[in-house]
Amino acid sequence: MVISHVQLLLLLLASLFFLPPLHAVDFKYCDGIGYPFVNVTRVEMDPYDIPNIAIYGFTKRPLLSGTVTLAYNIGGRNLPIKFYDLCTIRLGECPILPGTEFSLDLFQFPISREDIKNDKISVTLTDKFDLEADLMCVYFGFPTSTVSA
Image (cartoon, rainbow, N blue to C red; front, side, top):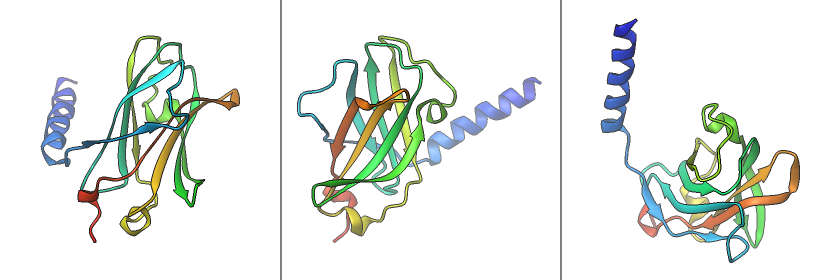
């Protein structure tokens, strides 16, 4: 039993050395001012492998469940790329309690470097039971250093 825990710890430590680092990108709230219950503190992405994004923040109310939508902005219209269940991407760590820092790790979405040269990506968190109310929405572009000309 102890050996399996040691092996898991070694695998985790090894992955930290081989996974490329994430880098912070500038983001803006979709509503321009922020949201009353969920605050985003930073957005990071892997500069070498675009389909990896991490959203960090904290909540002022319990988050029991929800849907995270990743969308691509084309000509001012948000087109959903992928939907994530909040508790699934948090590996079952739900609910998120008030005042708790959280991270949303979004991986493996279908988008190419050519698609994002001049456009934006948005990430929206909606309550599973009230899809009309956004708990949080941010948008951002990819750093120019990650997009080759």
